[in-house]
Image (cartoon, rainbow, N blue to C red):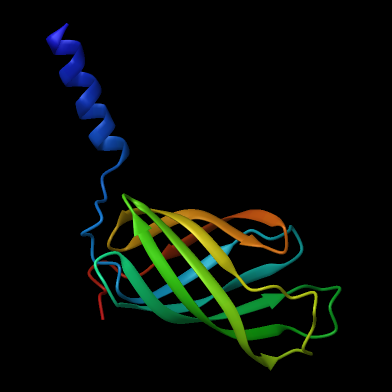
Length: 142
């Protein structure tokens, strides 16, 4: 019985390798699968503001064949960590490229922190949830 308990605890630790103290501050690139015909990605910068809180900025690019032009949108964000989960909530600051549209919603993310160089989860925007990944070069903390 004790052996089974030890195995279960060990497997639980493997399932959640990143802890709240993983350094996720710095530069990131991200992608999301928004549809078969469209591409979506960009860059983000997070700065630690508290034990579990961050502020930052992201710039997202969305390209779809059916749209007359690509969107390039700058957003301010706040983020918070709970265990190995990161919640990123953004607000649109500027449409750098593309017409300002009420149909382009802020890009929010719910991510699982895997390491200091990779997070995966979902882009949550305009009532949709789409697979997303944030990553950076190994050791790339700035």
